[in-house]
Image (cartoon, rainbow, N blue to C red; front, side):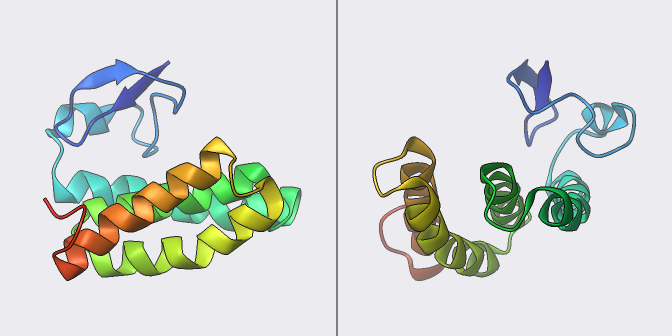
Length: 124
């Protein structure tokens, strides 16, 4: 499968090739903030479906929450990304455990986006 980077390049991964519902046209866009907003919006529309079908604490639902937070940050709203990850982290700890790789990834992303907001560790 193919994922699309913020610069519009392709790479290997398991995120799927048509993340934004454009039939791959997003890859031609060239990336940037507009693309992040489109993909983040697509993921945000998927979240209520996952909550309804899988439940609010299913690992796949938690994964989409992290995707939304990361795309929110990439769309230049690091404060919102930080806040979303701060809400997600205790749920990940409760559901998956404190040492689970996905919990640790959420913790890492929380530090990264917090740093971009506060100018501390993780600031670019």
